[in-house]
Length: 233
Ligand code: DC
Image (cartoon, rainbow, N blue to C red; front, side, top):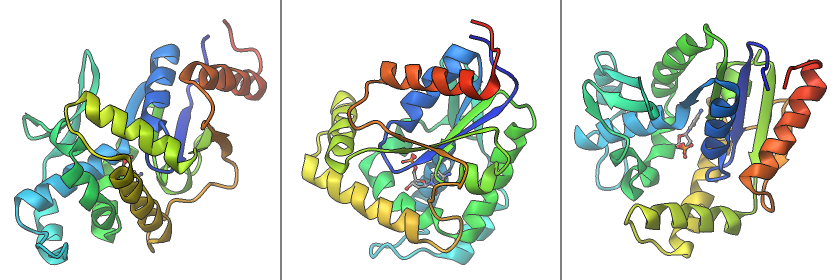
């Protein structure tokens, strides 16, 4: 199916399968997929490594803000899709660790961090044919995106999916620990002052608690046909 040059913004709670869905959309419609959460995770990894977060999880915001001025965090396109790099170091694995997951939400709530990431994300919007997932893509990063989706799913379903993904990568964690992490992140993400996670007024809600990825693709093809009319198969 060929669809017009649009931006697809996918927001929603943690571990609702936004990135798997967005990747599949990108491959089906020849769009570029960008994972905005990876940018916040990259900043968090740098903050941990440079000692800007102390043992009580307090952040040296002034130090972090100054480090961001020369922080070379970027996406590099590979045959395997876009990957996150600091300079020439690929950080895809490190940014998915429990340590980064446990610290990323407070870091993502810091206004200078959001400014840093937003600037990089908006660069990609200029080219269109982009599908980006995150928490504020449809509300703040691309408020004019032509198609906005807000994803949600039951907490336990999300925790089981995330624990399964982590086990596949060799990191064993209990469902309870993942549920606690997801709950905490949802709370911080939706209650922060700057660009909190919220559904854009014109976003379509997709609850995928009982849907497979294939079901979700059937759903989005229907939405696209309805919204953009005569798209060719
Ligand atoms: O999608 P994720 O789990 O990789 O996101 C990691 C964190 O980054 C998450 O706790 C919220 C934050 N985030 C954000 O605040 N805004 C975005 N657009 C994307 C992610």
